[in-house]
Image (tube, rainbow, N blue to C red; front, side, top):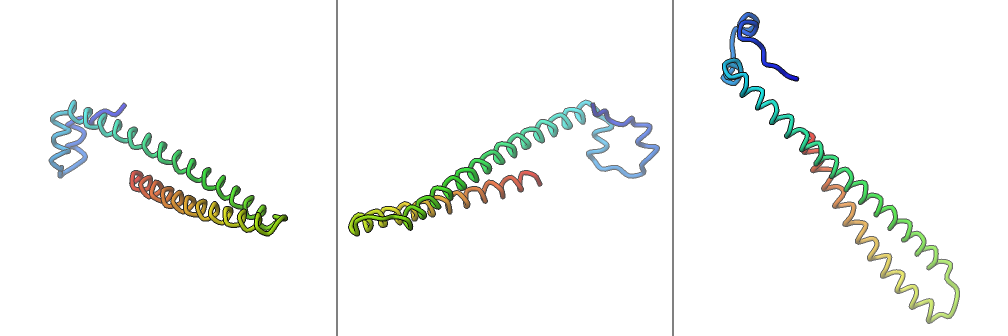
Length: 124
């Protein structure tokens, strides 16, 4: 546990002091309380960073799943055989689904980038 330096040892080792250092010497309990609050804030930020990292991992997992689905749909579209009318309908449906998946993947990438940026800002 952190303990404040003694007045005698601090005065012997240093010639000039900041206002906060002098307060810490005169009111060591307040310095300990401030240190405790700083530790609590650090733990809160670490929890928030961990939560945002988990969100980023989840977004990346969903993006990868969508990518796989898009590949399957493209393969299905390319390998499709059958009546021309059915094929045209299926192709249009697949194109619509692929467009929707691409839009959703783009949104997920943007959301993941946002969480990465906010995580990096919290680290600073």
